Length: 552
Image 1 (cartoon, helix red, strand yellow):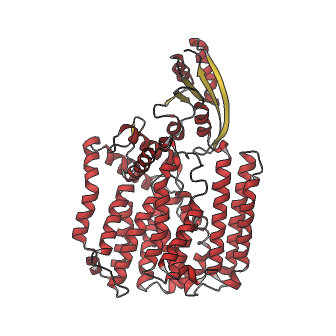
Image 2 (cartoon, rainbow, N blue to C red):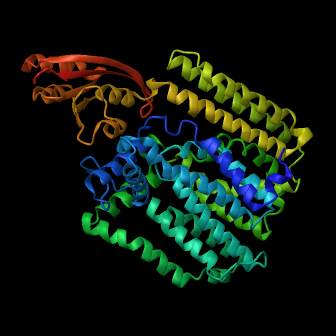
């Protein structure tokens, strides 16, 4: 399935991984509307930076937004500013532009997985590890969202890859190009990751180092990382913005980012995301599809090799951080994403050596390729029928192709082995991506009510001032304007009374209060279209009425 020419050189392997990544990540990338709520919040905060010219403070409308550092906002703002300079129309509200750093981060993570793996396994296995990352469902989702996690993953793979290669060199495996080559990558990646999502990247590295120090009873190899100049370099990169934001906000940044965000997630299930330990283990079989199916088959061989330097480091990368995330109360699927490259490298090494288990009960588990594909296919079709009240015929060819490849991956596993099955699984993932993100999501405007409201308001013939009642989603603020007012039904009527180009977007539950208040104050208004849709942020149906002031 994987021809020798594909991995005949590093250039070919990298080029093919790049193409696979684009096929997996690009469908629907520019067509899908802003997704509530995290993506829309990040994008809106960046938009306000561009509008105000203030690239130090982070705000969502009038509220400070200090849960995450500045890195992702700078990256997004750079793309938007460049697009505006090139004449891209409406660049400030084109969500695809804000997603470009995530796309670059996801592709970078795939290619850096390949680079990191080369220190542990053969070129062929390194390529397979990259394929697993490019085709994983979780990374496919994160590549399309304008937030931190794909970029953080890229930084983590760079840092942990450099750390792992240093550890191998210290154990007499491989060699460094230059004494400062790997340390420069390591400390720069730590600094970049810290600017993107705070100290989380430091946790991954620290837990791996401590685990190895305990198991090896030595940490002398850390000297190869040039810790003194390395720490100075990290501080030099991170400290200027920290000083600037402290001068601007006082202690508010640390109070919100460490107290209200990070520590709150440790002790309680923040924003209804509390789950019991074991959540990530269960979810892994879906989020790391299709590579996850081979994880069980590779586990016996990985256990046997656990004392080898390469396997020891990769397990130190995975196990302690995974346990921390299972213990922490707040759980979201993407938290463990930075651990997936290490899992991919371990699995790929076993596949390349032909060491996958032949135990019948594990081999029978390969039917999961077909079952997951069938479940996703059913979910896509059900979304078309329930939300869009249509059959979604354009998605059918992609879904049918995915089912065929999944069936062959499972049915022919015993004949062709893990490598062929994995490549067929990657084809399944790409086809599902084309169906779900390329056809279904863009083809169902009901999934994105804010987009429908914004399209209607663009026909107003004037610059609209907007108030919302009962529907307070960040995506509407991003698409309609930073000055969008959030109120209740009565407040929306009072807002329209001022006249001019004013609109009220009123959710059905707030309509009675709006109408009652409008009658009391003698408001003259006209009704626009009613927008029926599905609020992804809350998981509920919404019905929005749009009213316009008739007072000039």
